[in-house]
Image (cartoon, rainbow, N blue to C red):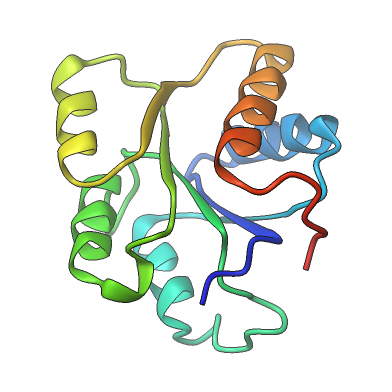
Length: 145
């Protein structure tokens, strides 16, 4: 069962992860944002594998923000894994990538991404984008877990 109070984000670049956290905090949305550094960490988190096996500390997310270009497992690998998993079939996955390539967008959608967004350059634009996408895919007013 998915917990709507948490958003899992996959971002391998430390600066981009910091900007994502800052932009998300500026949204003042009531969800907890947890950022992992690559696709393998995302799969381990979702499976509850160590070090993410403590569900109180690492609850199942209600949404996944997914960067495509990450080490170990890239975003496409994560989408393919999710597609095979019945447990996560309802998990909304939004790709948040620097790539504006049409082929990346098409493949991500074929693999089950609900949306594909190109990361904006400015922090304010990212804040607006996050507020819109989270508001679209998660229930309004759900308290953070």
